[in-house]
Image 1 (tube, each protein chain N blue to C red):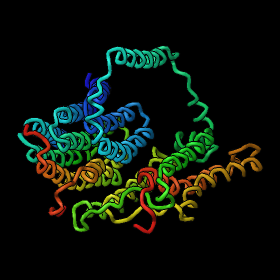
Image 2 (cartoon, rainbow over the protein chains, first blue to last red):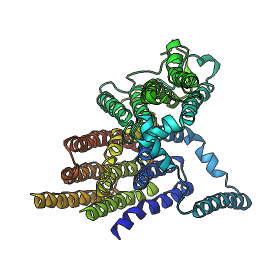
Image 3 (cartoon, helix red, strand yellow):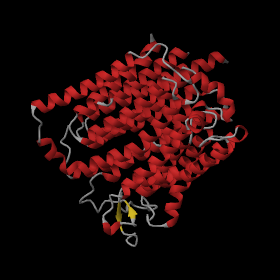
Image 4 (tube, chains in turn blue, orange, cyan):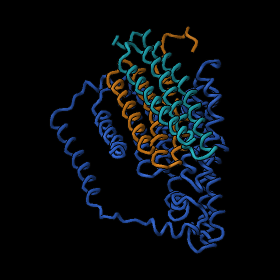
Length: 315
Length: 91
Length: 102
């Protein structure tokens, strides 16, 4: 009974929050709802024994999405009243409700009609886990069995940064991203931005390190490290680098390039792109992970820093 | 013992989620932010209780991640909150 | 010994849960932003601290126990700073006369 209640509580709360986030007026109130939604989702993933996903949700939801949403809601503040004044007519509301209902109903139907037991590749993963040399089956899937997907994901993050950069006005092209933040150097924000990042970077690297055998990995670890970098930026302790610098470009592409290089090695060593020779699998996975982690942290930090808006010299 | 921990997890989660009524009512954005902050630390407590209740120790790492990032939303909130006409104030 | 440790868990976790309850009641019932903030920052530190204390016997190792304590210390640091920062934002908003008195 109690166990059921523990499992049911987040599910009920998530549904209530979904309604709240949609219905509430005011973007900041909706953002707070979405932050809470992320926290509850983290708990739900743990309940489903998907701790790797919970870790991702915790890092992205609490670290990066919060910054994104709070900042967006602040930017929208001025136009908010005007948008609220435009009340859509009844036909539009009905149409939107109908579309949402069809999509929601379709997803519910798909979930309910899943065969029992659900199709799974888990036994194959477990049977071939030893060949990869890693102990965490999720890492084995991400880095060996479906390494192609992971490589494309790493490249997608890079493309997202290209999208952010493309928002630069001409005069700021090649310059620094986001505003220059000015916090009191003796204030509380500067204090936490000095105390927290050393701890946070250690935690980020730890999450990255244990990914080989336990829930964790480079995406989650890189997200925590990126969040610490952003914290130092917000407190004015450091600044985003000018994006025209060659070392910036080099650091951004180093990880994805290493991934592609290992893939090409696989063509010759194992007969297929991203194939690993059995006795070198763990070593090649480590090469990719170590090359990708700094690039990912750097890329995620810059994605969150905002569009370039200052020429380099106006630092 | 396990049932007790799960019950405590559910209780802490339900209580802190109840605090979200404050996010609904406001009146100020600071009040809304507080509700999120409370749910943040409540989630850490509930995760630890629930995770150790079902015997999954890897939740400690999830909680550690949440704890490192616990102040992040509030920091973003203060950094981007409007700050006109108070230059005299030393933050 | 094990009975004493179990008792510690029951008492500390129940007390921790009580402080979370107190924090929520304060957040919902106190009359203005700054008093609500007071309730919040006191309650969640103590609540999580007691829960961590109660869970220490179940951590299953020194490393995990240290991580539990680290979580509590990190949340205390974050919560104290967030409290200061939110209070500042609330005061700025009050000066602008932004939120109507509840």
